[in-house]
Image 1: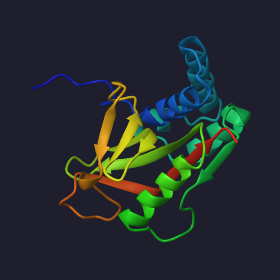
Image 2 (image 1 turned 90 degrees about the vertical axis):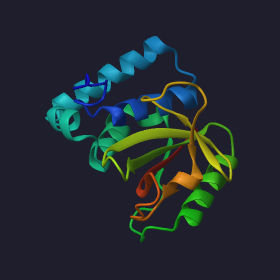
Image 3 (image 1 turned 180 degrees about the vertical axis):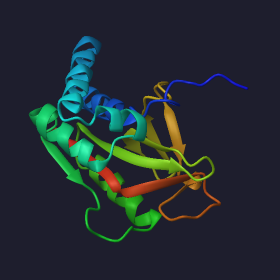
Length: 176
């Protein structure tokens, strides 16, 4: 038997993703990020969504609530990348994220993805993308240069790829 690591019993990566995106975009100091984290937790509790978010993870409804009620103008540009459209292939999705990030400074992508082999889901922040890799600002892997290699990614249910990216669960975020 092995010990459980942080994140195995709670599903707060969505909260961390929002806080980290805001921190990345605004250069927010750690103390202010802690205060924002508390505001988000209190909002989820006020809306009676905290237990659900803690144990089942953050849905798009949870994220929308936090963006609209807590984040507000801290991240003025928020768009769901592929809302209401069929799931694009990896090339189309990768190109959309690359184009968005390259269009200007102070941009990030809040990305939902999962592990095909282990079945877990995770929210992370993408702040740089190349034809071969995404550079993450991630709560599970906080080292500054955490990379996700494209060769290991898919947007379909291909089991030969380690990570399934979720275009419908992708927010494009920016300062303006």
